[in-house]
Image (cartoon, rainbow, N blue to C red; front, side, top):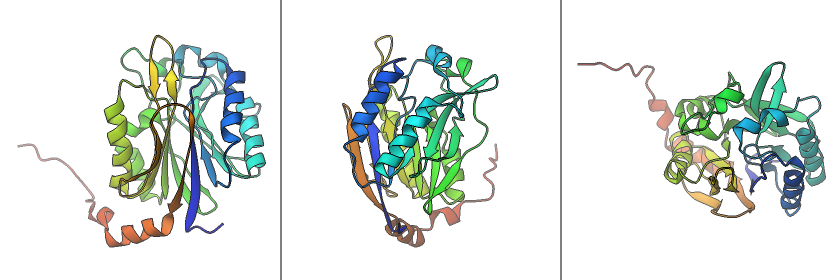
Length: 269
């Protein structure tokens, strides 16, 4: 595959809380309609839904993960790479909110463990999940992709680190609540603009527990902040061609990152 242009498909879905089989069936149905794409990207904890207190009972080890097995079969069937949203991984005594990356041949290429755990306004992810300790950028078919999950998006330092490391695409797989539409709208665009990088933000949609809902509004954004594909409500798939050479040309003309100072130590007066 040439690096000049790639096709991205992002899946927005409403996950049933704690019902893996139902969610597996739904993702297979949604993915079945996708053709000729290089990457399929899923939302956070799509396999069990967002309910922190239920996470541990649905945890899987990497060696025997039924979620990874399903994604591996889908990758081979569709001849595509899959960034598998996230699932709850158990490693020893720890539990992680983990993004798996699957190659076209079905092999597990990398995992990223969510670094920032959302634990505010009655949500207590940090009570059940261990924070990851490092960013992970995966190179697949010559494309550098920086991996993040949901609340990570509030930390621009993480995205800048990916950009400095050579990221072409930034990905955020989320279960973002409908009570926070403005931060989602602004930060998904900001991470793209400030890093001159394509941004793929994939979110769950619909009801969770306790009358809460996920926002939806999955979107693919270019390096200049233009939304090139999005879905506001409901379930479905969005696709977009990313022209990487145009991005590189833009970076060469607008060399913003060269103006970053070595230090921003504040002088207090």
